[in-house]
Every structure is written in C-alpha cells, then in structure tokens.
Length: 615
Ligand code: G6P
Image (cartoon, rainbow, N blue to C red; front, side, top):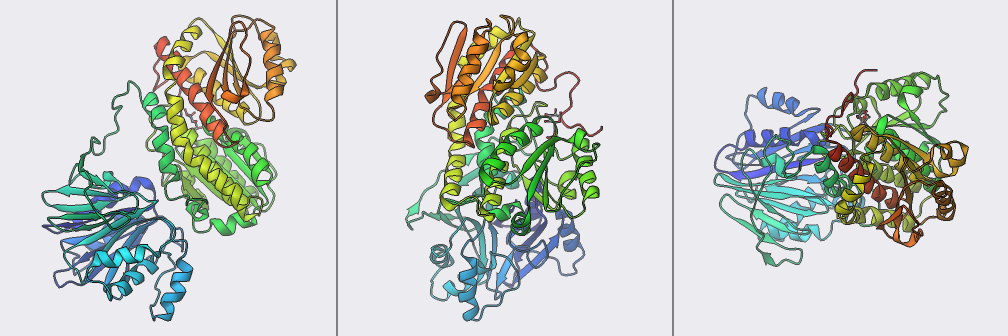
C-alpha cells in the first residue's frame, strides 16, 4: 500500500527521501518516485516502476543530480491506473504544484471533468492528479499555500494523506489527512512528514500525530497546524518508543502474546484506506480487481494450516452473503488431485508468508489446469512468491508475525476476506448499499470489541489450569464456528502439545461421543445465531456423558450452566462477520496460557516452522 515521506531540511533531502522509501517498502508497492525543489525553485522529479532500488539507479544515472532542501516522495500501490512511470507519484500541475497522495478520491471523475473545461491537461490515469490541479487553481485566489489546500480539501470525497509542495511557496510543504494516517517528524535538522513513523526513524524519534482533517504547514523551523474547522491547534510532540529495524517483544513475554494483543491495531491497519465511511474500496485489491471480480462465477480458496481455517470461514460467508459458489481446500491435497477448474474461477491463495511451498504449487497447478482463471493472493508479505504469481494481491498489513502459531495473521486474513466478499457481492448485485454499510460498520467496531475480549485474559488464565492433566480436548462449533473450533484446536495442539480435535457439533453422534468422559474436556462456541438451539441440544448430549465443558457464548445465547460446565460470555449481539473473529480471541488466549503453564517453547514449538517452504 502507498507510502509517503517528505520534509524541509537544512541540507540536501534526497538521501533522506530514499531512506524513507526503503523503510516503507514492507507495506508493498509497485512503483516509487520523488520530487525536490531545486535552488532555482523548479521541480526536479524522478519516478520508476518496481523496487526503490530502480529509483536509486535512475537517480544515479542522471547527469543533473536531484538536489534541494525541500522534497516529497512516494511508494505507490496501483489502484486507479496500472503501475507505470506516468501513474507513479509525485504528480505535478503546471510546474506550480506537486502532490503525493495515499488513499482514494471517490469524486475524481467529476473534478476531472470540471478541470478539463478549465484547460487542465491530465498526464496520468490516477485519481490523485485532480488534487494537484485543484490546488494550482486555488492558489490563484489564495494568499498562502495552506489557504489553497484548506479550500481544496473541502471539495474532496474519499480518503487522503497528502504531501504538497509549490514552486510559488518554496520554503514549505503542506500535509493533511483524512482517513489515511500522516505523522510529522521534528528534528534539529528540519521538519518532516510520513505516512508511518518507520520512514523517519533514522532522522528523528519525535513525532506529531495529525488528527482527522488537520492541515499542517511545515517549514524549516516551524510547524503550524489547523484543525478541520480551520482553528489553529497545538498537537503534542510524542517521543516514539519504536526502535528502527528491530522487532522485539516489548512488554510481553512471548511474540505470540504480543501478536495476540496487537490484533486491534493490526485490524485497523488492514482496514486503513480500504474502506470509506460506508463502503469497501474494491480497487484496494488492485487496479484490475473491478473487472476481474465482475466476471467471476465461482471461487476456489487454497491454503495450509491456520490460513486454511480462515478459508473455511470465508466459504460460509461467501456463499451465504455474496451468493457465489465457493470451495476451500488444503493446498497439499489440491496440488496433486487433478481437480476440475471451471472458466471464470477466482483462485484465492491465503498465506501469511506468501512462501508456503504447497500453496505455491497448488496455484501453479491451477494455472496449468486452466490458464484462463484469475488469481488473488491474500498475504502478509509483500513481494513474496505467491504475490508475484497472482493477478491480484491484497496485503493484510498485520506487521511482522514471529510466533510460529499464527494469530494476528489469521484475524487480519478474515478481515481481508470480508472486504473481498463485500467487493464481489456488490459487483454482482448481491449486496446492497445498506448491507455493505452494515458490514463496514461491523469491521470498524472490531478493534474495540477485540480489546474488550482481551480483558478476559485473567479469567482464561484460571481456566488454563484445568488442562494441565489432560491429554485430549474436543472443540465444537457449527457453521463458521466449526472453522473457529478448528483454529482453536490447532492452536492448542501446536503450542501446548495436547491432542485436540474440532468437530461440527452436529456430527458428534457419528463418532466422537464415544470418546467423551471426564478426562476429555469439551470446548464449545455458542454465538447467538440460527443454529443456537441445535447447538444447545448437542451440548446436552455431551454433558450427559460426564465431560467437563467450557462454553464461550454470546451473552444473548443464554446457555444454561450445568454441573462441571463453565459458561463464559465473550460478547453480545455480533453479526455473521464479526462473531467468528471475536470468538477466536479467547481460544488464542487459552492455548497461550495452557502452553505457558506447561512451559513449552511457545514461539518456536517443537518440530514446527513458521513458513514451510519445502514439501
Ligand atoms: C506453518 C505455520 C502455520 C501457518 C502455515 C501456513 O504450518 O506454522 O502457522 O498457518 O504454515 O503458512 P502461511 O504462511 O502459508 O499462512
């Protein structure tokens, strides 16, 4: 996804811009560019497709070096218009204004039509170029650059983080944000902007976090900020605790624990710039997504391990909500079984690492079986093998996941899959605007809901004690909660080495009931959905066979507690999409605390690897 870095300094800014772009590479991008105001107050710009090293090469090969004290730079992830030099940022209007932009301008077509009538020429296919032209036009009736930007942002619909320079105001850059993050960096050498503090960590640790709608004027020795309503405001300077280039456990004992607690932020990052107030931005799956999604007739999901469990949840969602046939399969099976792949299939690979050998081979096999299929990879790793092999890529933006047992990658995959099904459903007229808004509202609530669930850690710690002498556990759920039960069982066996199995609760009587006795705890997930009454009967079946039970329920499910049964309300009134994500959290915490009590190697469980790059 796009990245921004820029600043006003007392020396040549080009090396800092390049360093910042390199630090933003982890977010994924397909082109990059920078622009600097030269001593003669003219723009000097370079743009390249591909890696930042291509831009560096481009700069090194120039006879007239790009130098100056003021500049802005960008890594672009194509949404409107393919990856190309012309579409790469920064964009320029009439040698007077230059802009870098993260986000999407939804009303750019209308703005573009108006600007064409005023004689503006468009060099790119992007939604961003209209911002540069609009500011150039507004400057004519403004005393300052910031005044012109304040006028222009009023006409923009959508989301933006913007860095703006003008050759008419050569001592400053303007930064503003709405729906996309932007921070200001403060140092004795100058003042800076970036979409992410990581970009500036080599220069400063002092940051000002712009609030929604803020517009800031950045000069060498002064930063002035106005809020959404045009009032002068004072935003605090905060010292960052992040260490450049270092991934550490911080206040946590294990990476897995840290990653469980990072989920609210990871989900915020997954959603950032992918949704508006009430809709999903389809082009966040890539600029070709609209066309591809419109024409597909079925979906095949392939993955391994935890990613496979996310795919099973998605199968329920996709058929139920987007009304399109969907199948989910384990990659190591799919790759060898000579499956039938119909035309107009969207082949979706899910992979945290993007490097799992079986998933890669399953995609290659599918492309061989039917070379007309389109592929989408949902991954946490930019530039991974799967992303390179796929037509479309969606990065989960969960941040580095170090613990072998996957946690935040799973929940962010679910969020990504929800965005995918929403995009596909609306293009196929199966999801209307009201439903879309409901889904988007639900996703926006997730970080807060997860935080509430994480507060139950102490209660779950106590529960964990009862697993110490157990050799086996059964997890039960129905519908999407069967897949969440599978994920709960996988977590428990991976890190606590207790055998665990998940069953769809309706299948109990076809086998697992025979196993049930007081030594086999049963964990059930009871959301308040249309299968609740059936699940309650299944719980009775188990209870009457003497098992110790733990039921994680929706408050409104009102599962009646019985002897040796603990009912734990996790949340209340959740929708089809939010519920499976929330019920995952107590299961992650339970496995973690059982493993902690058993003193296993939580982050690196025996015999397992984070990324299985061999068959
Ligand atoms: C390994 C890891 C799991 C992961 C699976 C798939 O088994 O230990 O945590 O879910 O690989 O990995 P992927 O990177 O493709 O999601």
